[in-house]
Amino acid sequence: KKQIQELQSYFSENQELQKESPYYGKFKGKNVIVIQAESLNTFPIGLKVNGEEVTPNLNDLIGESHYYPNTYLQIGRGNTSDAEFVSNNSLYPMAPKGVYNAYPFNEYMSLANVLKREGYSTSATHGNNPDFWNRHQAYPEQGYQTFYHKNHPKITADEIVGLGISDESIFNQMAEIYTEDKKPFYNFIVSLTNHRPFVMPKDHQYLNLPKRFEGTNTGHYLQSTKYFDETIGLFIEDLKRKNLWDDTIFVVYGDHYGPLPMDKDEINKLIGVDFNEKEQFNIPLIIHHPGQTEGAVNEVTASQMDIFPTITSLLGIDQKLIQFGKPLDVDHEGFAGFAYETTRYSFYSDSYDYIASHDGVFSSGKCIDNKTKKQTDIEACRENYNKLYKDIELSTMFLENDLITKLY
Ligand code: GP9
View 1 (cartoon, rainbow, N blue to C red):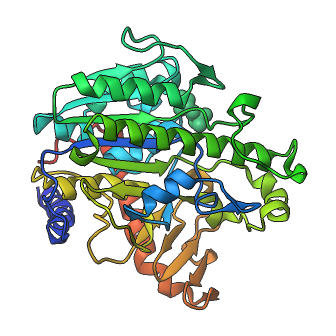
View 2 (tube, rainbow, N blue to C red; view 1 turned 180 degrees about the horizontal axis):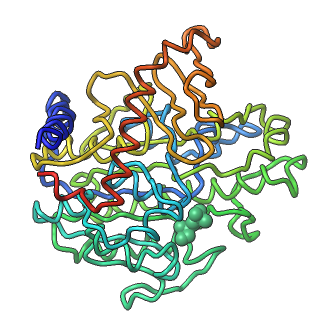
């Protein structure tokens, strides 16, 4: 009983923090559209090749949104599906085969479930088969009332590019569906076209790349990222035309890295970016508030599990929740902790980064002072390490015993 009380106060403390945000409850009852952008890293954002912007539309969106450039992925074995899970549940993805495969039928306190209780209509969209990553089984407990996939009667597979229906077509179709949706709505879109191997059909290559990019993975990736950017631009225009833009919190973030570590040298040679591990894990997070016209860059260290608490803070949700992440618009020590086997217990934070060693012993890891960028006394990392260790244990216990909705 004491343990339960301790846990309850641990999570309610975290939630009380949301009320300290200057935006707490400011967008109560607004629609929410979240785009989880396939393979979108941070490095193409703002990048110019031969004077041409790779992501002009995302750059424009950032210019009038809250932008968190120091956000990091937190995927586990479930890759894209774990990114979805972490951002919508603010839990660590502790499952050997990915959470959607291992625990699809648990009860979750996800963003969609929370919003359903607030009277929202909820849906998820993915332009491939419903059983990919076991979404058809996982989505009902994630709280999505409707799952728009390739075979859904309201969806037309009119343009297939790469892994499924093209992003342009999916965005188009969803904008039309929103006009009929019961308001307010929450729609979660998993984009798909910017997927490995990133080779776009000729007529979808919009970037004028110099000859030296021809046939390279980097060239393909930039071309494919440019395509995603183009479709986001069209989507936003469409939402404005349909008078939805000013009534909607619009979120875009990357699910996981695009290029692989083996592309590191080529990326460096072609665009001068050092694609080290921190750069690989770096994904953009953009949150546009309804009516916002001026951009604000927040440098705090953030992770995918901060997305859910940041959104519930904007919406002023006062339900009892379990969230391991933090609301990003509140002053706090920014933190991104990792649970994937090869990086488990490593973390990045505003002050220190900790790189765990493979033997799992705390003192064999490396603690880096972010002010000097140099290795420092391991003890400086102990407090954050202990917290991460405890949070990962808790997340695992909640998942394995289906306890997430049972704490309160
Ligand atoms: C497949 C798509 C991509 O459903 O979401 O998944 P990934 O291969 O990136 O994990």
